Every structure is written in structure tokens, then in C-alpha cells.
Length: 345
Image (cartoon, rainbow, N blue to C red; front, side, top):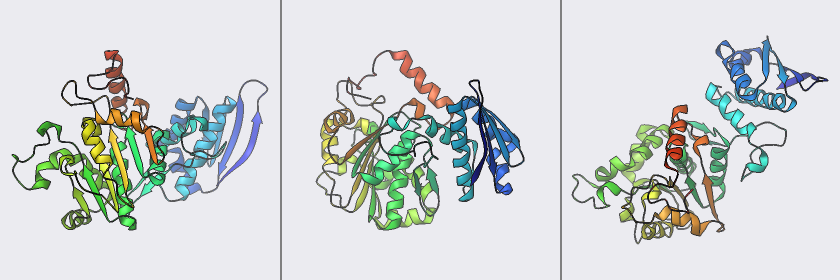
């Protein structure tokens, strides 16, 4: 825990705050190598952060100093819980703190308190939300039967959906995970490809498999696939089924037609969760074909039991360059890409 030794508002616009941390063993991890974590706080929040042993002196505008305090206390709590703190974690905490409570669709931050970021834990890994959008998305998957995660590449939509499904399977809350993705490149006609069904659709579902192997031991994944607890289900082969006791994930949903999307959504059975991810700006359907995802977002907004989590380029958690690339493409067009239409995000 931290101790606030002195809070001394200046007579000018600046404020001073001194914090002390009890466990000296954790302090070096909190500050980061060569105080890089403190430097990131200074850069992002516009404060001065000077360390002396287990003490940190903060100086800056009152609001910024309070944000820096909350960030340091939250990061220290993570260390006390045995979780490592990397620059990416510092960035995530700052993003959370910079977002006002009123902007969040689900409860996330304690007023004037510490950050309580949502997380997904499996036996192999624990994933912590890296920004407010991810935080709301994780919480929504816990609370709603059907969740849409829509936005640009690199925001973690698919990865978090697979992680959530994996933890439900490990807890025994569901019996199986069903992964689906429209194979637009093959026109959903996969019969001419060699191999069994899994081999035919593997190239289209590789991102889902990658996330599974990050969340679960490889031998567990293979065993579940062999037993049917993890099922690869091409969208074209979902018709007529009722999916009960399952976590069902539809990835790249912007490439579904209206008919396909309605068919997929109506497969939901008892004790099941359905997560639909996609980016309405990346539609690969033939020109003039309406995206089923775009239509669904319009028709299902406000329907009880359904939550829509929206991501933007600001929520990209891959390399920082990815966010700049997304913004560059969006800024260059001046109008929605083909297939997006006025209802897209």
C-alpha cells in the first residue's frame, strides 16, 4: 500500500504530492528500468515525477498530479498481487485514468480511486484490459449473452473473445467452443480444397487458433479439438443447428451477408454465449452486397441482452504505428469504403 506523506497545494497553479511505498523490493519494478515508467507518466500526464528511494515527489497541475497518484498506486497494487509491470501496463493504466467515468458504458473506475481493470484468467495466462474499450468489452462478455465487438484491426476484439471462451470452458460453464469465420475468398464453397473440413478452413481460422494456443496448453487444445470440445464450424455449415452450452465466436463478421448473419445469430441456444467481431471498414463482399454486420448493428442496437462494444484507432494495442496507419487510411478516403454504408461505425 502507498502512504500519502504530504499533499501541499501551491499558491500558484501547481500542486505537490509526495508518496511513499512500503516494500522496497517492489519499488524498482514500479519505477521501471532507468525510471522509464516514471518518465512515461511525466510524458503522458504532464507532471514531474522524481524518485528518492521509496519516495516519489509529484508536481504539476492538481488534476494531473492526482491522475499520476492513482496510476502509481494502481501499478503498485499489481506488483503486490505478484503481477509484473511493463511499460505497456503503465500505458494501459494511464489510458484508463484519462477516461472519465461518464464516458464508459459499464462501471470501470472508482470515483477518484484506483483503476480496477477487467481481466480474463486461464490456467496458462491472465489478460488484463489495456484501455477503457477493452475493459468494457471484457465486462460485457461476462454480463451479456450476445456481444458485438466492432472496430479496426489491432484492438484485441478477437483475441479477448477467444480468451473469454477459453476461461468459460476451463471453468466448466460451457461444454464447447465453436469458432466460425466466413471464408469469403473461397465463396464459402470449400469442397474443392483438399483434406477434411478442419484442414479446409484452417487458413481462415488461424487467428482464432493463435489466440487459443496463447490461452491454453497446446496439448489441451489438441485434445479438445479431437474430442469436439473445440469445434471449427465454417459459417456455411451452421445452418439448421442449435448451439447450446457453448461459447460461439464469429470472426470477420463484416464479410457475412444479411442472410448469413441472421442465420448465425438465430443459432443461439440455452446456456450459450455468442460473440461477434468485425470491422465494418474492411468489407470484402462483392460490390453492392450489404454487410450483415452493418445491418445487425443497426437493427439490434438497444435490444435487451445484446451489448455492442465499439473500438476506434485510439484503442489499437499493437505497435503504435498500427494506430497511425488506421488513421491515415481513414483520413485519406473522406467517405466510407465500399460496402460500409451510412450505418457502419
